[in-house]
Image (tube, rainbow, N blue to C red; front, side):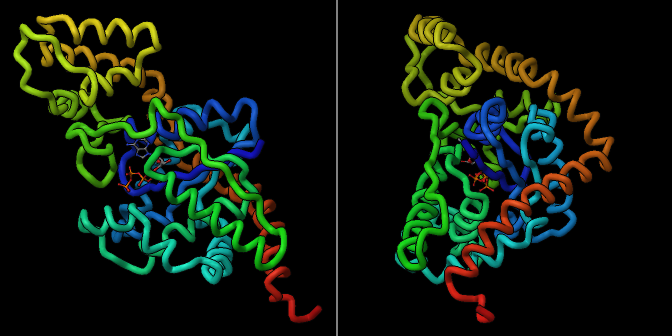
Length: 323
Ligand code: AQP
């Protein structure tokens, strides 16, 4: 099965990105045809500093490679290296109803958080649909925040196929309920742009400080602690299997548990979990040429697939005036 997903180099990647998407992508590459890319055109909706975008794109590539994305098994590239996606965005725009975009939660959330209400931000889901349809993706692993965007991509594909004849594969979202929305340290969705993220490759001091700042309730020590909606419990659970999670739950429900101690423990768990990846990332950061060559080679492979879908779409809408 062809599995595809992208990630914005709009900031340092965090536990929400990892559990919501990256970890699952790495697992999928074993038995599927995996397409994975860094969506820097999308990041332009919120990053207005060229040097910062360059740096974040390179770092996101190092993060993904360090976390196990294997460029021999998968196609891994930077969105803007396959410019065909911008042409497809235009072709799709004409079958995308305004109402569909006006209902986008993400647009409303992002403008409410101060990201400029540009046409790019408004049309973000059309570019995302182009990303998916250009590569014939069947399955798209995402966090819950992207569910509506996936529905928009499906609507666009169906509308295009109905208008111009069978052109695109209609993609299926793939959302894992247990990690659908990883909370940030303030209890809202963990996000690069909300200042509430625990970054995968943060330095030791910075990560410890973030973990110690996880919002907790004021239940007295000698009382059982709630687990439902408890950010500390939820974040800790991400690193546990079912049996261990049950044990953690028991600890929370037993009077005497001190949140401060659990936070210290959680910091240790996160730090250890990413230790081997951290080493690999340090190596990659120093080998810039290898990372760039890998991305370029990925773009070459991606373009071969993109060319087929774009050509079909161009023909089906009638841009081939010479025929
Ligand atoms: N908190 C989260 N829980 C679960 N999944 C998440 N994802 C992001 N945050 C969480 C998933 O990570 C993938 C890549 O996300 P993205 O970079 O395309 O953009 P996003 O969803 O808008 O992520 P952020 O971190 O919130 O970025 P900004 O602040 O730049 O908008 C997606 O599959 C997403 O679902």
